Length: 141
Image 1 (tube, rainbow, N blue to C red):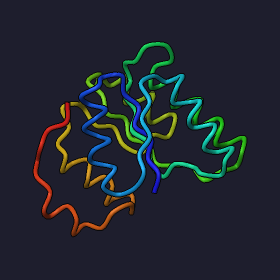
Image 2: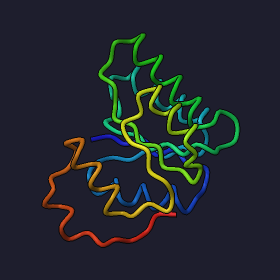
Image 3: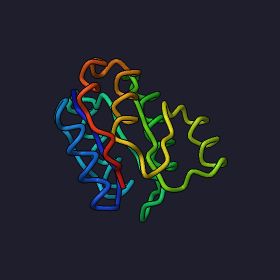
């Protein structure tokens, strides 16, 4: 499993990386531009991501613009799309609508419970439900 975590807030980025790295390799990006470069390189190298988490409010290319570009690239190269979860403090209905338009798989509002994130991984078939039984409800910033 390969994961890409995109968030410009260091604490939130670190916490999500810590959680996901228990289940596979984890790359981190602090902007949409950096994340898009990493995503494109992963496809070129034949090492696509299984899942990415995306913050909306970031410098440069925001998370929704990044999501749109990723979906377009996935369509051009005919690769299997990775799962995408928006994790943001900007939980406005307009953001949810835009995320759905660009086929985001889940939309979580900060602070997100660790257990909720893990349940999404179970839902996507990335981890087994049994693994979530021993995980605490620690908050993500």
